[in-house]
Length: 584
Image 1 (tube, rainbow, N blue to C red):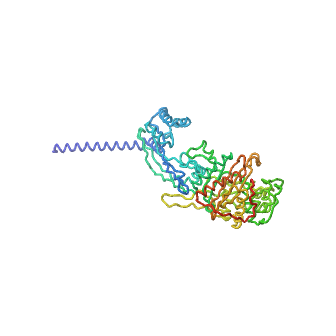
Image 2 (cartoon, rainbow, N blue to C red; image 1 turned 60 degrees about the vertical axis):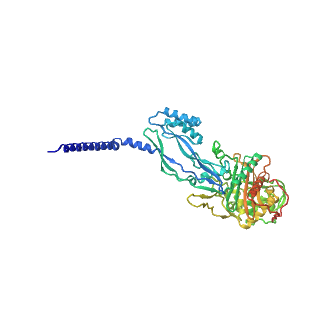
Image 3 (cartoon, rainbow, N blue to C red; image 1 turned 30 degrees about the vertical axis):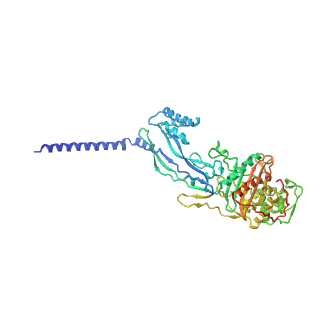
């Protein structure tokens, strides 16, 4: 006979077994419900949750000048976004977001966009991006349900307007859209991460979980010198305003390396306060704009004549009439210059004499020289959207083309191409491609140089030496005398070109482009510079408008570089007409 305790134990065992079986049954039913009955619904919720995966933007790399002065960096800022609560009406959502919008002083167009997104049942709505800390604090103190702050990065340019056209700009998502920011966007941007926006069942609580951390972008070190850039910008602005010109460009480079030390446009703009629309002023005319160069292009004609031995130094040309009729067209000098020998034609920038010389060179040799100097093709500078200019193929040249090309017409060039032609002379006939980025700084590796393109020879070193000597005469006693700085060796070429009206298909006698391209030496080329001034009012010759700008910038750079003057005169190989100062 079983005892009382045995019966009680047996009942407890049955009771526990019953509840265990019941628990297992409930669990099985729950699994059936989740996996079978509610599968479609739960799958939709899972998909919805995946839609809450947001990109985490990496910190964009900084940009420095050659002396490690910071030109661009990304700083932390807060952005405001909205997530609706569960089963909340559109009117309730709009009521709350409208208050935030009013606090942030959002424009009516932005508020209309937000309301439209609410009506479309959007689950994530940006209210404001990258706002100031004070505004972020105001939003936080309002403690509005469904409104949250997220930390992002905003591009900041400590120097304001400095080198704005070279640096370029980014959009609201920190993606480069112009300049260096665009050209090197992949390197600067880094790699995006991923984060998951988490909420409770009632969608009241918010947290952000990092699924994949971002990889920050690399830094860039430019060839620019911030001080030289400042000097160039200041003097260019002064010149454009004083001459009431449309715009101006200055480029300064180290010929031996191709490093761009400064590149500036005026008008310019502050990268921290963009104009509306931003594209209004961000066109970098130094590499984008093409123009007929005029007499600065005579460097190519001079080189072609020497390279092909078409003319001797002792030959003379009768420029007494002050004009020449070629293929039915009349070409004029800026003044009657009389009889000139070969060097004097270029020293005093005679169109008449240059056309005589161009005719001696011949169209095939001249065309070949133009191509060798790199015209009609891009220089390869590491800036986006570089124009290649316009050089018609030889079969499209007309009877007048030799004369026109000889003096810098019927061809369009960019300022950077024109500067490179002078750098060829400074580099003993070799093309050294220009560049704006010197190094890429990887925080996990050593600095690595950005190698320039392979060098090419355009003319012989003998030709380049003779061209240099003639261009010394241009500054010593010719049209470029206003670029002269006592105690320093400078050579270059002035240019004054009539602007071409593409609508009327003719050159304008009332609108000009004044320019000067020159090199400052100090036991070798120290730096080269081109100044281009578009449509100056009043005085418009390159010698009157552009060459003085060159002189003022060069004087300040020499002082900055601590290069003292040499107290002796420089003799050239040219029997120039000393003291003659023409207006070209």
